[in-house]
Length: 90
Image (spheres, rainbow, N blue to C red):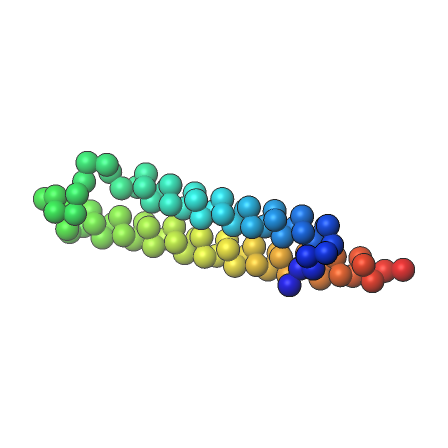
C-alpha cells in the first residue's frame, strides 16, 4: 500500500486512480457506441447473430479493462516500492 503521508506516494496513488477511472469510463462509452441507438432487445434480428456479436465485443472491452486495471495495480506496487527505496536512501 502507498504511504498516505508521503506527497510523492499520494500523487502517484491519485494519478493511478484517475487513470483507472478514465479507463472504466472509456469502456462504458465504447460499449454505448457499439450498441446502435435504434436497437431494442425485442427488435427483429437482434436476438441472434447481431446480439451475440455485440455481447462478444462488450466482453472483449471488459477483458481489456480488466487487463489495464491489473497493469495499473502492478504499476502502483512498483511505484510504492520505488518510493519506499527513495525514502530509505541516505
